[in-house]
Image 1 (cartoon, rainbow, N blue to C red):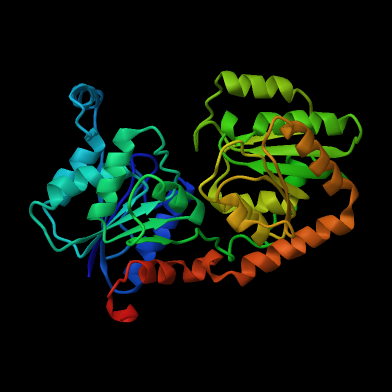
Image 2: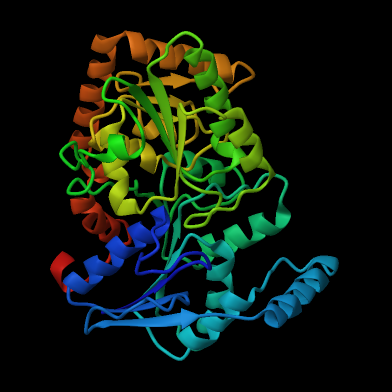
Length: 403
């Protein structure tokens, strides 16, 4: 079999820069290679990318500002003419290159416009290739005719459309006809990395956290919709009552960068004390060590999340969780393994109450941690070990090993 894995214009695959989608794409690449297939990856250019297998080839794509401007002009004209299509330089370069080759499967990761641009050019030459669209985000189709048209095109031209949660699949089905060829495949966690034994015994000391201090932790992008500001406000309220607590915030505005914009400055001003620790970006392989250092993991997102990878990671490290009732998050968590709060106008108070309960009720906290770990180990779809096998089952892959 010859497989193409096509990734969005964000972080590279192989996943040398981290990124949840990129790490999962890496699992799929490695699964095909282990099965004996040939794999071509089409990804954003990165000087550190290396072809690490004899049956792997990497096509690195880049473009300039002029190309971006030209396609922006095209898209503006399309919009005026009510043409329901969009073209982007990264996508069109991939479409041109990939059309020179023939594949049994093309897997497009997390980008419906990328899928459309590739298919329209590729399918003119190659009719038998099966297209797989792997959707990791909410398509946001309400009141958006363009996205509805493109999404329906993806469903009509895909062998399978894979959604990462039932929540985002049901949301898409309100606006497009995709029921017959769509599947759900949950994201997964690597238990060899995320486990309670993966610790750095000096990490607390490095961060200036005393042995007897109680630690809440957040990990994610440093953006307003993740609810970090509300978390800090709730923590400050709790700090007025309890001295020996710390809040550790892992992440940056954009993965791998420190972009100190207006929101970041607002957050830092609200966090002006030694009790709130900003670590900046942390490599994915080291996140488990930070989770193991903490007492409670808080996931205060204000938006509907497609899934909840951070929740899986916390569950695997046997940590109690406070999370908002959000989209696919509730397919990962339940009320036995966490405190799930509403993300309403009382969100700060809700967070404060939940954090206070976790601090004072040790028995409850330990029960949440135990139930979380039990749940994540019992559901096979959450285990990286079965991720590729479950993926090929969803796409009806007919490779030799899985016939």
